[in-house]
Length: 251
Image (cartoon, rainbow, N blue to C red; front, side, top):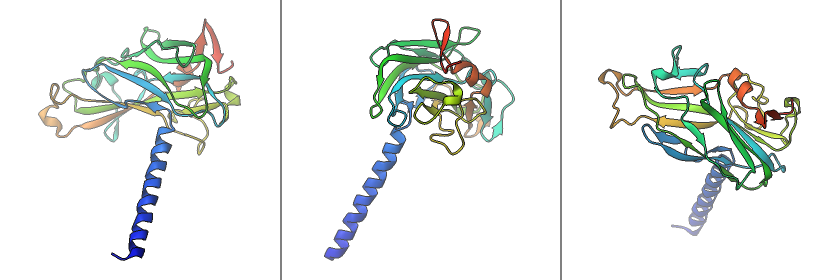
């Protein structure tokens, strides 16, 4: 092999490595779930991974909302599903639990619906997270149970997360105040189309345990189910309430 060809191949290999590294860094910069896929019938420890600050601003809190399944938008395969989430997951409603950990933020609490089911949580206060660092907010996902007669092979939940860097009203949201890792469903927390992280929620996928809960013979390969929270739920559950008062966003 000629020397020029060897040099050219080396440069191509180096550029390929740099591009791959850049892609990985871009993905890991998002606020995501450390374990985005879990298995039915198994309880799983997990973490919200805060990827970076709001530009140069440190993260002073984070707020998380999981779809409650009550008025969520559900898609089965490529088709909208007008029925209930329980058609696919029989016990969704109180599977998420925040784990107490004050190593990042000094205060934290769960968010519950009118039935006492945990639909999200928040953490905030203390020194916060430097803009150039990552942080873990631990929680657990209890064992989900798929409806045995359904053809669902997986259910993916869009998880809405807002990293807070400055306390402002919703009208004061800007790139140096919040990072909106939320689905674009028409809520006040959508962000601007084309803006940073627009329509980029975190995901939690629960995969069916095909060994212990196989698909019915009539299902073939089955289908994937997608669940997005409604705008009404995000607007209701995203604010941070501390000691009975809303502290973010400013009312």
